[in-house]
Image 1 (cartoon, rainbow, N blue to C red):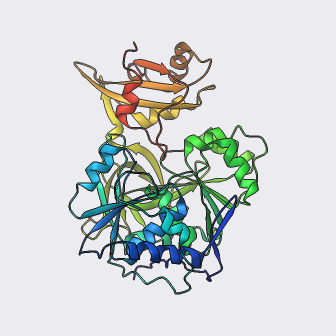
Image 2 (cartoon, helix red, strand yellow; image 1 turned 90 degrees about the horizontal axis):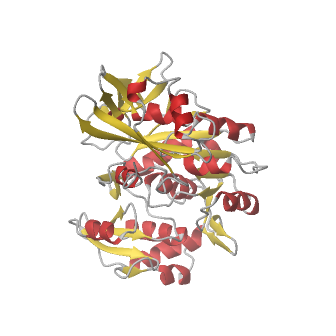
Image 3 (spheres, rainbow, N blue to C red; image 1 turned 30 degrees about the horizontal axis):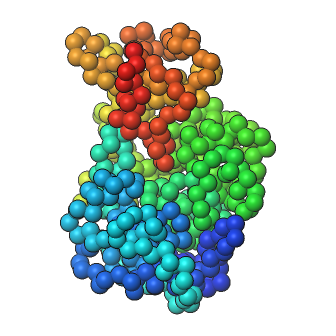
Length: 440
């Protein structure tokens, strides 16, 4: 039987579930805020959803729990851009937007949450097959695909994560990832809210601010992304924390080692919107499947996943877009995405492989590679965007030749101050390509 975490599990009415510089929110206060949101919504019809959009994590959590208590599912928009919201609100069954002043439409529940009275009654149990949320993939193509999540999948994943990482129970968590992303939702809101823990209210976007907040708020768990951790490694005297999570993209090996020397052993988590969490690793070791997750590899090196977090109508095992090599002890090595493998001339190379070698070069702080179809004998070529102050194209090409054949080296290079990474650390292909417009 699939385990399902309980919202407000491990709390008493007085247990702090959120905190900030001048504010502590108890479980009873958040429960009362959720009930107030539920009462403010019109009765839900079968299958209806509302969009939840809020910067304040207490408002977000109250709107989330309130929508579920009122019988709605929640549509989690990948961003707050007007066209994105318009597209999602136009989907069948989407009723309205609940926000804290983010938009000019829908229901602003910010004041309702702030003025709500405490409520001591337990949160109602959510049936395992009840639809809870639709999350939208934010992959490199820019096209967002809807992934429905039941309580069995979403809260079941929380239970699996608590089994794998029991030391996060009761922890004080700081998440740099926004809660409308599945990674930020799970690790930054639902894990603390289901284990007697608490989360920091506001957003902390900069490395220096994070370091200060870790000390000021006695943070136990940091939920971050590779680009943010790469900036953190330059900080002197990193404060001790119980655990650091990273997801959304691979963490460069040198970043992981630098952080480990500073006392942070980063736990990377591999997963997707379609599969839920798959595996974890530390310091570049092979990937260890999460509890209840089984993996295999097919003849084309595609990673196959079977887990309780898969949707009922998903193929079992689910064939992912990741390439992998299975090891004899059940762990596996990640070989990059299958859709990132291309043929240049007669040679096959993966985008992930080129990016990995770029990040090994001294002076390269961040890098991303774009695959471009050019036709003819070459078929495809790659372009590289780098954050590498003082590094020349010649030195980059010379370093890459130590690992790659000349024919597969990037044909164009663009040096920038920062890459256009999104909150999750990913980069859309369109945003990456825009860096090269007008550049030769």
